[in-house]
Length: 128
Image (tube, rainbow, N blue to C red; front, side, top):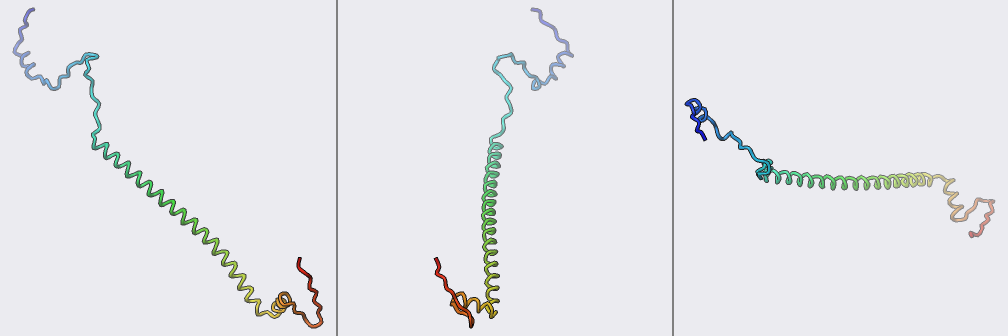
């Protein structure tokens, strides 16, 4: 083989060449593959901790919603009970106001004690 003579300008060109920028061509199937950038382990851990914290927060919110629903159900039951007691109170107040009425007292005396007015005849029928 013949040896080539390099000129001074060609030697200067080669001396300024940066070999770090040079990528060697790879042969197909040579086994060298470009590596994918790996996510750092600490980034994965931070992500998992974040997901875990979100899971815990979600559970706490769900527990609070369940307690709120139970409280609302108890309030509804107590409101129904209060309405029933208010109706009973009104009925008793009406009954108390009638206790001072002489006609009502006479009616109760006839029903419970079988009393009669002068000149009335009572017929008592047996209860079946």
